[in-house]
Structures are given as structure tokens and as C-alpha cells.
Length: 120
Image (cartoon, rainbow, N blue to C red; front, side, top):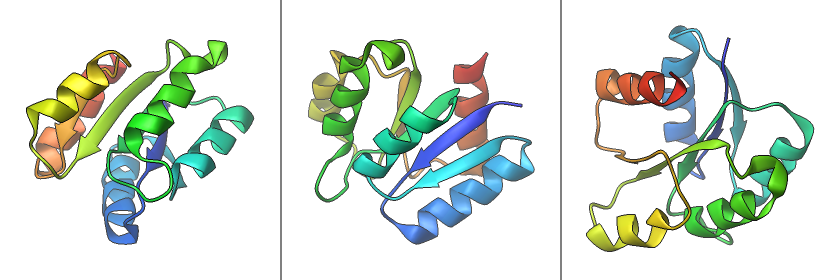
């Protein structure tokens, strides 16, 4: 069973996305900030990080940069989720090598399909 670290500062999105993933058979660990996510990564074996782009204190780009700077996590699969549809965001993230940038507006089926594709 794949272990997914779900990172989002919105409790409702965290709860809903977490339920979807758990019902699909994934083990889900939740974090509400970039700092919390980095702490979890140090303690657990994670197969995929679903990372919110817009968060206070440390946004998704900063969090992903710190993940990639750590030799242990340079190849970790990361999907960045964003509520904004902006080419600049994708360009900003490109150098940090996320497997996918996924709009939060995607429905449950598209969300779970994207997760399954990245985990293949």
C-alpha cells in the first residue's frame, strides 16, 4: 500500500482529499504546513507528497525546494495542487521537478487517476 503525505492548510480540503485517498486504498498522513511536512518526511517512508501550492509561512514552492535540497528526497514523487490556474506557477515549479501540477478544481475521479498515474 502506497503511503501518501497530504499537505494542505485548508482543513476541509485535507479531510475530503484524505477520505478519497483512504477509500481508494492508500495510507494517508496529513500535514497542515510545509514545516510539518518536512518533519513527517524525516520520520516516515513516503511514496508520494500531495503538496498545496498556497500556504502561509512556507508555500508549496519553498517546501518543494527544501525537499529537493535533501539528498534523501531528491527523487521523491511530488504532485503540487493549486487553486490557481497560472502558467507562471508551472514555470516556477518546473526546475523543482514535480511529477505533476494538479488543479484543485479537478473532481474526485481525475484527482485519484492523477495519483494512480504518478504512483505507477
